[in-house]
Length: 275
Image (cartoon, rainbow, N blue to C red; front, side, top):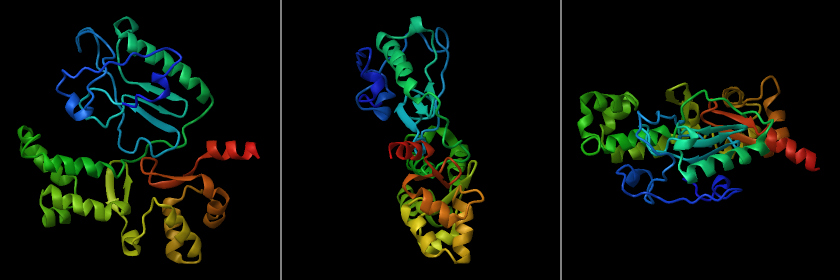
């Protein structure tokens, strides 16, 4: 929970008081939980929604503001923004909100006015590579935190990693974390399927760091560079080299947007109008 965010600062005062009596708080936030609503869940209030927190902010028009008690874990997003869209995941009538919850909700509406007219820079097309952190965490907790989940869950964790990795590392969380750190920069994905780019691995080149763009420019006449440009640049029919040079200051990489480089058209428009 980002207590320094604008929706907790005004125009209405938000008196945030953390409750440390809930067992979920230890994992989610050591400060405790912020009560947003009152009433028994499933009876007086319905269950709300959260968004996948991994990779949520890999687009510059997205903000994660707070998680909330949920079944997906503390990294899931309960309150967040994408472009001109606000997600308020808590689901209860206003008269069942706490005073601070109601004030923050009204502040959020005021905060969102400045984004009127914006449209999302990217749509979600794939799962972020950061999910491998979650997979390693699952492996680490198989004999403790998740010991009651049974063999089906253990098999599911195995299936989250390439077969050759499981053959080498087993479900040893330490070894899996070493493997993750060594290979995370070469991940690519489509929908929920994460794979690895052998071309990048051979080059020891990350697909999401600026050095990737430099390499494409320096090797523009290389056939592999052409292949990688088509794979990772959202440049349409525009020549990759020209597209990079024209937009370099506003390019960003998004896992969830399909493992591609995109142009932050909002920042580019703002820069051009300021000239």
